[in-house]
Image 1 (cartoon, rainbow, N blue to C red):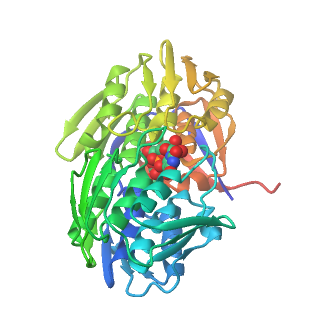
Image 2 (cartoon, helix red, strand yellow):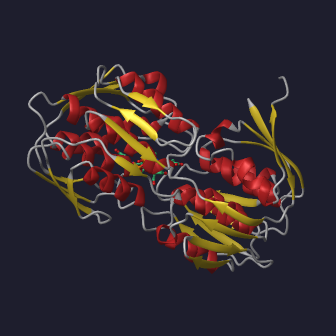
Image 3 (cartoon, helix red, strand yellow):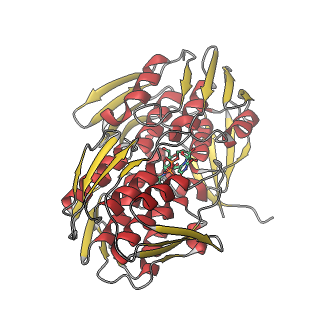
Length: 425
Ligand code: EPZ
């Protein structure tokens, strides 16, 4: 099991290219199930979660291939086993987004319940509600969701909002199922995340008829068949936001390439709020840090609000602001695994229910810390870049789930991150 040894403080400078979006690629890989034949997906990032999702598709009967820098090829001519196995689903909650396409393609699906994870419960009641509205019979058995639609799916008007707002993968599941349902489906309170728009655009390229893309109201006219597709996924806005914070927290300057600034307006707003410079360029932006960070308040919300996936990274930056900030997590109220670890690095963070009071400090100090979930781990890397001394991050596999060899991306910019074997226990 790898660890990171990070020498700090450093000041990053240079240019970095943003990879394709993990959270667009995973549901788009699932969408390949809907069409007999081989789809080709470009821009899919090389991440452990993507490899695991490819393994999952292969257990269903798909053939998944990828050579060198070639696009990923998914041949879904045969779906011999519409069952999402617990051994894979328990490692990656996103596996749940095979439910809708399997149901639409095969008329039945069995997918293990995702269960909880480091950022909190991962319920699927909205997924189930939406698919039932489309005519599926769904029951739970031995920890598996069993969904059947022997007579096919039919269009419906579905309100998909929950107590935390919209659901990203719930919208993905319902949209993919409705694409092959008989008749019209209207989804109200659909997720508006760019990754859902990317999925909808990919489905339309496969022959679906989806309108209202990017809005909370999707209209899907069911079609009898979808055909395989050649498609390129959008850049990863969360990786881009992480690199923007890396520039800010090290008081450096980075040029981001292949970054859609329009997907990050709430993040750019907050960074400018605290004194970070963000200058748009033709295909991204230039981000420059400041020696005097201002405090701010931030609340995570569904898109276009401030993304929960960048909450931990922004908190690491606010730990160095000149004053007190308040961070409120409205999407996953327990998503604060990074707080105790950042405090080990001399941050001054105090959890108050769904909020954390961030009292800015002058410096962070290196320490051994524990990675937990993907984005909390990224925040610890950012803190390690700014902290004085040698930071050791354990359980680096969490970071590899969402960032492709992050040390190979950051070291050319001035970081000193060394991937090493964990010492024998
Ligand atoms: C997606 O997860 C992302 N994952 C998450 O990114 C992201 O944090 C999340 O959306 C919110 O933006 C992928 O796209 C693979 P939700 P998802 O359903 O779809 C509640 C990362 O770090 N809810 O939008 O699983 C839920 O508990 C990952 O890349 C229900 O109550 O999240 C949460 O409070 C982490 N019932 C809120 O809705 C349901 O049926 C939003 O969850 C479904 C969700």
